[in-house]
Figure 1 (cartoon, rainbow, N blue to C red):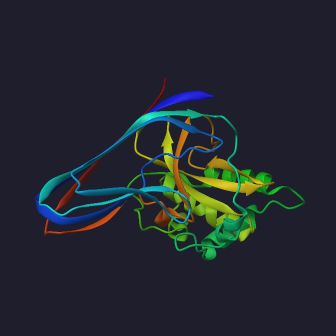
Figure 2 (tube, rainbow, N blue to C red):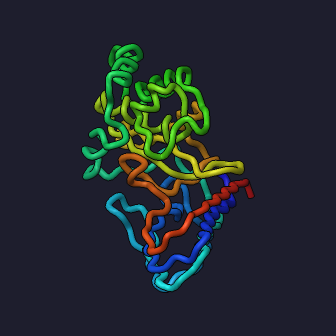
Length: 260
């Protein structure tokens, strides 16, 4: 087990004032049997209304608004998580069928189907072993490269390009696992180091959810802090919102996770 201190900061600036700003934030790490959030400090500036809710996947959200004019919007989430308590998280059988089905970002085309045909693991093996095999094959084939894809790129489009970032690795692996009929879900979180948020896959096998980081070809360990999960990126967007104003938006994100 480890104690990890995490610091997640999102800063938005606008060249002109905006108003009637309504937002939904999914940036609060969750406690489960793998990790426990020991301390948590959440700050949103500015706001006039703010409440904590849960979505359909039990992810915690901040729902709020700021109706007054403003040119900056800041979100800070920091605290300490105890991680590595278990190698897996528990199961909610009621949602497993949802995670077997392809979702908007993971719909396979011929490129993904051909990859699956070439790399399918024959024989009677567990879903976990099959998932590990597909992760390793994907890591060997797909290349990490920034600015090739964007947040709208699907799994099929990313595999056609042959390179991308953690979101793309995760979507491709989800698509492959769902072809195999294995329940799996998209995870947003943080890992030890500095940079941005990270994405990985959780796969269901023998009554438990296990984390697989295809980007780094690693099993999710005590060096990871989970924030949310869903069918794909669309269910886990950290900041969604609308506002009134013809402003140019600039975003800056800083993530630091370090051992206590």
